[in-house]
Length: 336
Image 1 (spheres, rainbow, N blue to C red):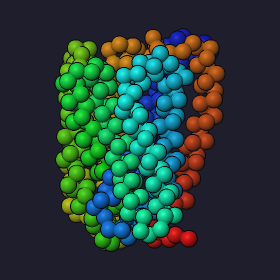
Image 2: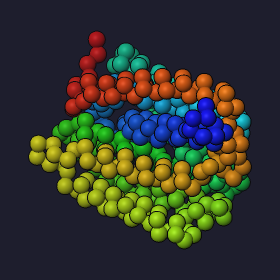
Image 3: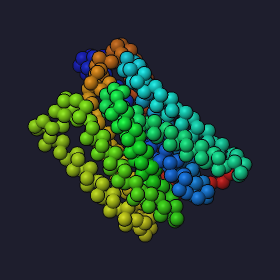
């Protein structure tokens, strides 16, 4: 336990890192399949079948990362888990209801009679929308320190809208890579229309974070931190400009660069998440509780770490296998 130094220091850091990676992977992977659900109202019935086929092999496995992240929060930082879930009880409930509705609709739309399929399509969209709005609201409340003031609630509602637009953009870029023909052209148009909402959301959260506390302000705007971190916003601008340019030259012959928008959007999410992680570290509950104060006993953490090091490679291996086997364009969806 003492091989890597003080276990009271390195064990909480390792678990915070594992939890952060799990959340980031969930945001990207489940973000695109939630985004596909958000785009349902703008597609024709046959296009909806193709959209479902594009996420069918992946959507349930993508949600495994959310379970892993919440599980790590519970077992590694139980006190923080109680504080965060207590503050976000209502949006968590809405998110879970949305995810359940979405999962049920996903399965039932394939088995329901044709006359009922439209109702399940609406349920799939409603579940996707509820889940995304709830996650955005939770993000907004977390950024503002889990303090329930009218200003913070208004910001959280705005963040919910921005995250919904952001997920629809990454969902559209996923469809650009998985679809072809008319649906691909529509996905390109959806991504073009949503990109500025994504940019506005990243900008709003980035601007709000330093205003939460003087500590976060100093982490970003003190010298030499300001000079060291300056490449992050510059790189974000470059990624946005490149994404905008690529979306205006697609589609290309032989489907060249079809996956470039998804890669660029994913990079934007990674940069935004990295900025948030830097801002709030070492706090797991903003300005209230650090990862070291909230961590479970080292004796418990070392046992949990052994389990995590067994489970995590299995999840990664399954995900890589699924994305490898079902690579390529989405095929026609048939019902038997």
